Figure: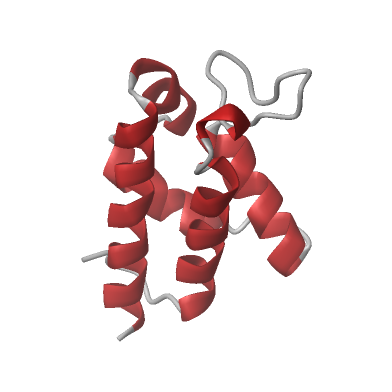
Amino acid sequence: MVAVATTTIEAEILQAARKRITPVEQWTQGSLRSRDGAVCALAALIDASRAALGGLDVLALKILKKVTGGCVSDFNDAHTHDEVLAAFDRAVELAEEAAR
């Protein structure tokens, strides 16, 4: 469980970020954003946070970093699309557990 108190907004942001990259053609590796509009895991999280809060949700990022073992961009670039989606799934679970 994540040690800090959270609310369901982190889970919602993580879910929105996951949804953004669920179609593989909307996901990229090696950069935050591709010319055709695809994004990496970190950019998806940044975009979802901005849409919900107007800025980065640091707690949602902290949860995702816990799951990925540190750098979200490095994880994104070194893992498959399915593995990145699974990391988001686990981060959502942790956020929901912490909100209880």
